[in-house]
Length: 290
Image (cartoon, rainbow, N blue to C red; front, side, top):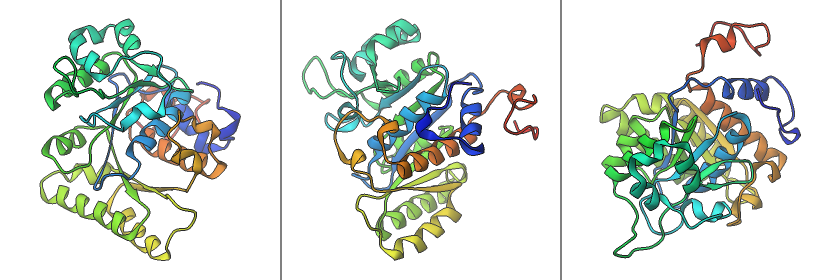
């Protein structure tokens, strides 16, 4: 188990997170981040959550801009060390299964998170990938990395629903407004009606607060969302999340670090771990789980 940074304190919750993160089963669990609406902070959460998990997981963790667009996304949340983008990953094709090739194409965040940024050019030589191309890139990367996070578009297309359907942990991001959370509830209901009930059953809903105060009515609709999804976590307002700079979760406020820890724990709790990890006396709990 890797050392827990002092910024995240101690206690059973964080120790269990770090222990399970060190015991992930091979096969690269896939964490898919989407939402019912646009502009809710999906990319911010992807990098913040990925940056925290990169501290806990001993092997490299990768985050991929899978938005299929030529703007925004993950590139503003990580310092660029090269001009490589997801389009170069498409061109590399099966070469991505070599760790060296994959590492050369990714940027590296402050905590070691590998980030495959989106393609911002629209030319005859470069463009954002199509969904089939993106699915190929993801498949290759999963043979190299221990854990992968996808920054997906909003869930208004069949392809995004498909990605959420085969993800290990679907994460749905919502604004901290009554309308925002209600739209997430409708999305969960539509997915159940479409035969994708397993998505709400394991979905982690993350409510992003973008102002210092939250209307009291939001709490009531959040309670409904808690009943409709596997878990709900509210991430408080933090100026550090609003700046378009490389994001280091260790530099956020204590309340935000605590909330991100809860999101990370909810994600890791839904990822398969090696059975032997919880059979010894050194484990934070040895109740025979997975």
